[in-house]
Image (cartoon, rainbow, N blue to C red):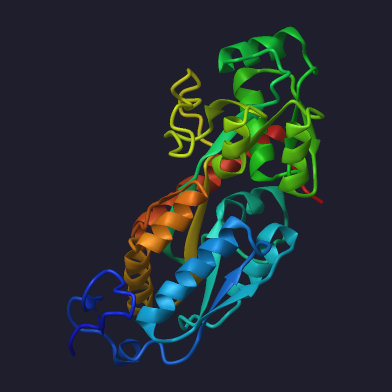
Length: 329
């Protein structure tokens, strides 16, 4: 049997005739897909996961010649969506938009979540990474990371940091910062990221770790002061802001990331189809533009690379969560 070949889409997705296999392919994979594919998203409409899913959905539908239906299943920090995806038939017709919480941090901070990110999913690709930025209200008398640390050490309990809730990315970044700098800063949890950020802009809370896309305009308007990027490389949205690693806390990395997974047991040939079509979609100008606007650096890794990435992220965050005693209820 020959290779699977996907013809050129109407939007010219990644060129002509994308070959997805190199040799013998089982007959079952040759006619995939023959019906709509469901992509489960664990977060609210309009959030990064939802936006990425809809961009990919439109592009992949063109090439795969089947609709990619977005199904929003918010709640329980993504666990509801992940459990549904984990229990779906491993036939390539149900996928999950995974992220840091669902695939790395939730198992360490919650018991009996209904799935195991390492055992219950087949990685397809790491779609992209999103830099978080440490911002402070302009009233805080610190114009550098060093000054912020010195202030926090000199006046324990004076500085507060906001987050969208216990165990959220912003909370874990703040806790990691507190542990590595040995400063006494006070966590102020909110139920959603929007109100948390607004209270930092309003000066009710002094600081926050937030996505670059959420704070860039505030920084440019001087409503917030950006002190450092909490990822291993700078953000294109705030290129003049150094990373925490550059500023002396070597190895500090509180990056948010997004990836595509399928239920464990999905045939390798189908995973390969999905990986190659997704990789091509990520090269499309529309995907690059929209994801860039969200402050997301496109990755498009192989299934094996994404599997290794997840396996490295789980123990990293588990260690942080255990050492800090963070638990959700």
